[in-house]
Length: 319
Ligand code: HPA
Ligand code: ZN
Image (cartoon, rainbow, N blue to C red; front, side, top):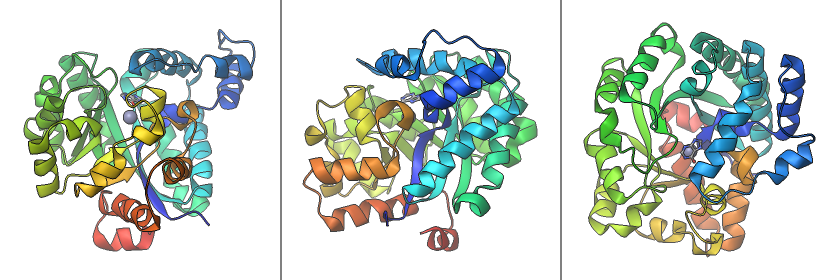
């Protein structure tokens, strides 16, 4: 039995497995520039975040209808259940779809359909987090939040993802203020490829309650002290960090150092169809590659529920 855990850093578009991509391409009459699933898998030779993002956005062309988004999310939830996931807070990238002419309502209603029946079908409670693409303008992020207004009841938080370097959190101050006013919680990717100063900005300018990745905090002792003091969770994605070359090998991953420093770290999967593993696979990978004992693994699993946007009763029920 895999250890029960919460998945807190998961891009639903990053769960698009080659088999489903080809099935949806056929259903929607979309031509993919790959002949077979094997040929597509061979394209997964990333050298950094941008080379991954290029393929990640290209493959989204197959997602067009509410059914597509519902099927994508349902397939993810079925897999996650098999890996011990009991609660999932799921990112989506509306601008990557609206830019292709897919209505934001199609995206959210499709995802919500799968999420609404997830507890019954898969034993997983869920939340949905709308992410802004940081390499798009601040104005586009504001437009996206406005377009999401009729669907706010489906959303628990906003996040920030895509190409980090050169797109600091401060660029999105206004839209994060508006999201807070609308009652949404706030998270942001920071310190994946970007410098520790981006993590400071996410905390001090965007008011985030959780940091996604955040691994570069270890370069700044004052920042580590701040994150420990305020019990700010960091959603760390070990297999992603290796595949995108943010760390050289799993054995070099700062996760044990982060735990030793007293940081509230969790282990998540980011884009599991691309990076070689879902939540349980990430737990297995760090168990084998790093000096983490059973106690440390239990701490990581417990942290995932502490860091989730659940109240104490909900967290107890989910775990
Ligand atoms: N980092 C930034 N943006 C992303 C990622 C990531 O790991 N995955 C999907 N969008
Ligand atoms: Zn991510």
